[in-house]
Length: 411
Image 1 (cartoon, rainbow, N blue to C red):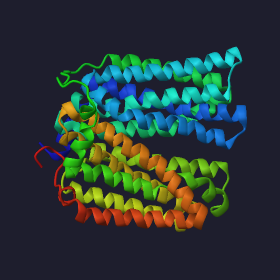
Image 2: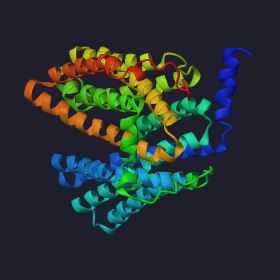
Image 3: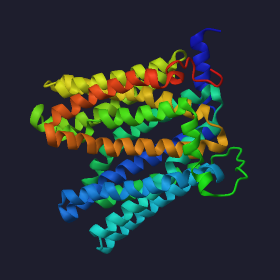
Image 4: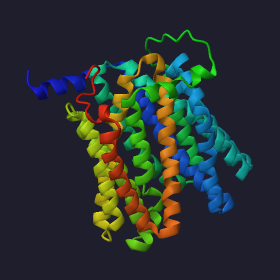
């Protein structure tokens, strides 16, 4: 049997796994609804207060509870049924949509209500992330895990591209239309997740701070996992240019709102394309070097974006950042899941979620701070150079990661 026939059979076999397909559809519906909800929530707040500060508070009120609750949520994900946790998170977001709908029709939409709902969404996110990351390895065999992660990533990127656009389109008929549509999708996601069946054997250890923090200890002791998770942390922390896109679009590239929209969509488009490529042709050998190379190219593309004054070249550079980031996400997520025993996956996924959340939020702060001091070009260019230096440094600091040949167990 030829290699392409084997790959085709593997992909068809993946989609023959009913539990995985149900959960994949649940995540697709849930992520699309969440993206629509975020767009409408921000616009709704701005309609009420016309305050940029309040827009920032919406993000902050989501981030803080997510940060505080993620480690306990990882402990819960290792003890409770992960499909039920995910369904509960979808139900919590559906409750947020119901409250927002009631506020519109009851004429009590206020700044304080939206901030309170932002806290609810942040809490739901804290429990959702570890559960959904740790559940996928339970639904497929180790040989199919890389493809499963890639297929999941491609669906999420499609939702991240389409969700905000759909939410913005529906908002032209008013925020209630967006909230009602999100509610339907979130309830569908919850119903699908409740139907996910897998063998669940919770650990016997009782809850304690030592148990909650066991994921941190586990990651610290496993240098391959520590190297993979911190690589993403520093790469996104230094190399993120998203927060500065409005400045580049208006002042440096001389484009309008449509151009800004294209620039924002470019990384997700690149990630989606690369995810589809990896589904068909998964990476097999020298995965450690390829991971570090992908991060290095991510930094180089960021550098090119910072120096470019051509809209087309800037768009291409951002597409490349998304494509290389997709390689990093798929390889890092697969490696972490394969290296972690099932009874620890929730807590280790929680640590990974903290790194991802911190890198995104702190990365925007870092970019904005440097831009305020030395300008946006210096901020993005220095970030790109810093990311390339991190990729080079990880060759020496984490040789076990750099020399990793295969993703599969025992590699």
